Length: 256
Image (cartoon, rainbow, N blue to C red; front, side):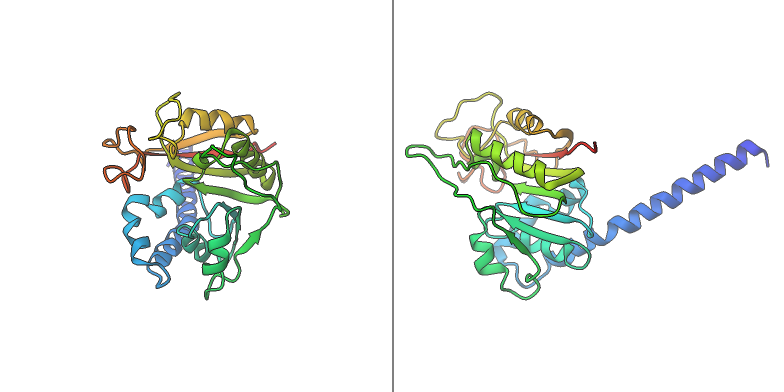
């Protein structure tokens, strides 16, 4: 066998081994998410949303690993918390922050969720009279730098100043190289706010604002692209609910 052939085989073998190692490392978190999807704590309403929200594929796209320390912003009723907490329980750590009232009261006391930690930045979320958007002052989290910050369908709820505070806090909380994961309902580019699009946000604006906080735009996926959402109607309308077009963006804090 020639030296060239031997070298090629060595490179191929190394690539295969690296691929196998990568698969072995990434498989457990997908398996854990799938197991969490079968847990009794999930309601029938939770399960009905699986086909639309595609949590396994979404979290794999963001690069979640089971040994990460992650913050979920604005967890709401805990739809994603019920999946993230079990996936990170053995080797990682889940924190929840901002708008954690329902999760703190209804989910964390449940078996298997006691290790989820609530981060309280000591701020007040307010809304000016006549405005539908919330705001909050600048803040930081009292936590060692984490690997990932995630927020699902929350960005649209805040004013420009509120979004800036959230983006800045996410940047400060992340390790160099850490991931900021953002999913939200799509609004037409540069469309002014009206009665039908208040729960949508312009994806180009999101990229601009998150980059201004210091992040690099790394990737997007069309997992949640919906051809038949015409971006004309409020996401709660019968013709749209459960089938809204959503952008899914992966940002990264520069490594240096």
